[in-house]
Length: 411
Image (cartoon, rainbow, N blue to C red; front, side, top):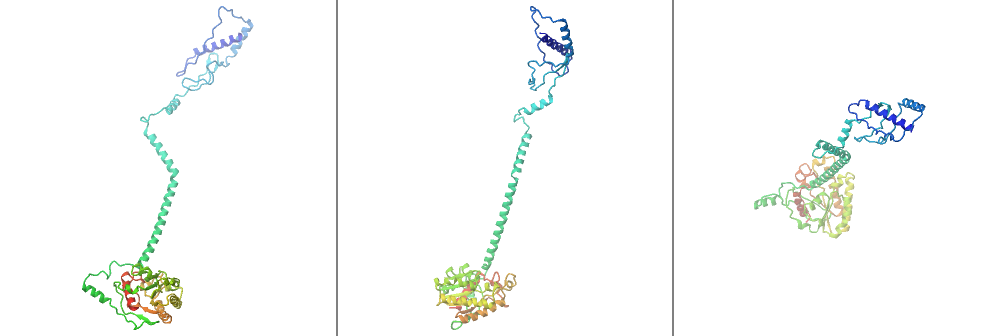
């Protein structure tokens, strides 16, 4: 009981000190403890000895700095009305109290503002715009490398496709240049008896033929190349041509069918030997050989070596179709401009030298040498530029003259 009475006295003294101390502005009044009910008056209070009471009083005075005992409701986890935690109230001694730590109103307001729900109609649109922009930027940064890589691949594919197409067009133009058709030509004439008479007169046969075409003979013409219609198709009903670009043009321009053509733009006399077997199925009565330009342009063989290839070809043809007549057509000339190109190894001197050798080959192998060069040469001995588009092949309208003349020379 003495100890309890002493504690009650200390508490009452502490509360009395708090009441006498003025409160600071903005501070909340500390919670007061309920006063203990004194013992009933009917119950006699135990008296302590005088010495013990004096000793107890001295102990109370010396313990002024003692801590205030923690009461119920003032635990360390207790919350204020504003939701913030607070430390238990500490007493320095009787009549003295430490100010309680108060929350910062400004910080609380900011936190409350951050948690406050803002309706969409009251929100600042700029905040949502910034969020959208930031999201777009993150998406762009994530995929921009893939986008740039895809664009680079597309550009590379387009460049490669353009290059391939350009090469294909160049090749096609080169091939078409071999058989180029002029926009205008002598074939476009006004119908009428007088015009037809003049055309026929200009294309009359002025050929000097041998009385007979014995084996090993030479046939030539004094005609000059001119544009004319193809009128001798019947003469080639049982004939086959073996040749290079000029012979390819006969099929390209549909003068003769593919069954009468054995040709390749790169064909030479030595390569033609591999195609002779095709003659067996058609069994022609006449075989025309028009080769030599590619042999000279390869620049890998001499004129004598090329002439030997022709002799071997004629021998092989005779073995395949013994009854066929073989006509060795002269190597056609080229233009002076074509001769001056760095990619062309053909010269007119080599053309003339090869034709002289082919006459000898025809005489010794039983073939007929058919010389048509004079009809296509200009005054300088080169190919007339009016009859060609690329310097060595014939234009479309001059194929009629070539085929008609050959038919008359070999009938």
